[in-house]
Image (cartoon, rainbow, N blue to C red; front, side, top):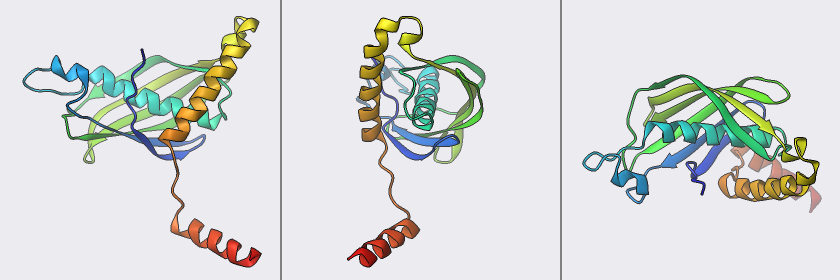
Amino acid sequence: MSFDFIDRITDLRPGERVEAIKTLTLAEEYLKDHFPRFPVMPGVLMLEAMFQASAWLIRQSEEFQHSVVVLKEARNTKYTGFVEPGQTLVVSAKIIKQDESTTTLKARGEIDGSGAVSSRLLVHRYNLRENDPAAAGKDAYMIEHLRRKFDLLYFPIATDEESEENTAEASESA
C-alpha cells in the first residue's frame, strides 16, 4: 500500500525546483494514534512529503526515464514545527547536484511561511530492467502509471504574459 503526501504540485521548474502542498485533515488514519489529544503529522511523514515532491521533480526533469525513484538518505534533517489538522504543509525542493543515478536536493517544509522541517535528500533512480531485462514491460507500465498520476497533481496555470501571447497568436491565425 502506498500513501500520497502531496495533494498538488503548485510550481515546477524542470532541472531546478518544485513546490507542492499537503493539507492535513482529521481523516488521516495515523492521526488517531499520533497523538490522541494532540493530532499532528508525524515527522517522518513530513520528510516523506518532501521526498515525494522531490521525486516528481526528478521524474519530470528527466521526462520519466526511470521507473523507480527512492530515498537513499536524508541528512541534516531538522524539525522546527508541527503540522496540525487544517494546516497546509508547503514543501519545496531544489536540485543541488545530480549524476547518472543519484540526485541531491535541498528540501524544506513550511506552514504559513514558518519553517517546519528541512533536510538534504539523496535520491536514487533506476529502472528494473537494469537488473532484469525481462522487467522492461514493468518499467513501461510503471512509467505510464506515474505520468497519469503526475497529470492529476500538476496542471500549470498560464501567467498573464503567457495568456496574452496565446491570445495574440490565436488572433493572428484567425
